[in-house]
Length: 400
Image (cartoon, rainbow, N blue to C red; front, top):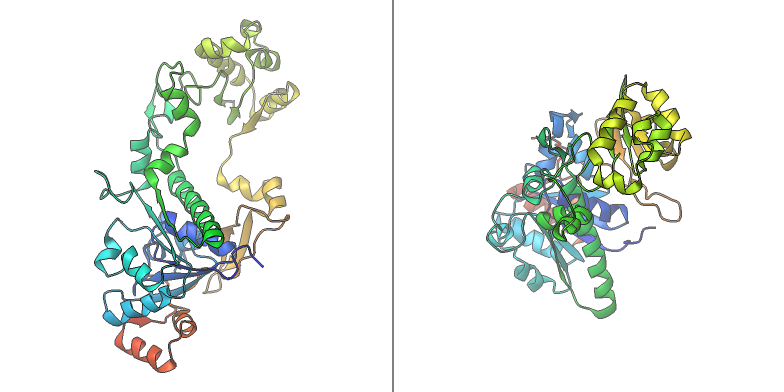
């Protein structure tokens, strides 16, 4: 049983943020139907690192579980009519195209509400439905640049740095899920069916809420990034990544005196917590000197003995052996449709101590086309006619 059992979601999403949001809803029990073009959605045909396993893209692995797939030609009148019949059965319709894209196909919000006034309509865009930037491409690294995230990452000595993943896409997905669940709750109480809008620009800003708010309200700063090894511009030293003889250690919030005691640094032993703010460079340079005299293991032992919050900097490979990740069952092992092993990230929320199960691994394109249409009231003859006309397809094809 899931919290969203009985809720049907039609997902017209592609790329990452929209499909990831739809996957979260599927994890919670919703019947998520991915409505894909005849050649498959983008994330099925493209993969980060160009990595496919048995023709299943790692992007489809990332966002494709707990969904059924139907492949439809929305430009074909029969295909469009079929989708409208599906909309009549849905609770939620999701899409993350540029504003106006579905309108041109005859699937505007007004068109959909004409079929089903009770739907929750959820749109995830780069910059919102209107405004001067509405038609711009909303891609994660571009939003990192515009939102200040890149400018505030890296060091003053070496310039801005892009975050090495796609945090804005994932945060936009989480916000979309929160908005849809809130809208479903309101509809249950009041009968009102809302439009839910999430844009990546505000998602990027929300992701930086603490630092943006401090900056906008006059917090002291010498620049947008940390210097002398500091991880950012706003924290007291030491706060950042420090090199050892054989690796790196991240040091979190602590006082200069704590580090002086741990690393035998008499020059900063008398520094106060306030000096951690006002003399950041001196403290951070002293800590860097102390850390580079020790191996990672030695430094970690000394920091732990002094009660200094820290972690060894590790790569993704260490996550598989991380005892807490293992305890939380943060990875799910499954198999592709071709039978090869694949590793998925588990749903990140627990309910009464349990993680929602993977009911469906990422499915082949159009695997459930006939099944979904039959549930919407299509006869076998109607489905056969749609297949024969090429308005829909039912296939195990996984990659374009």
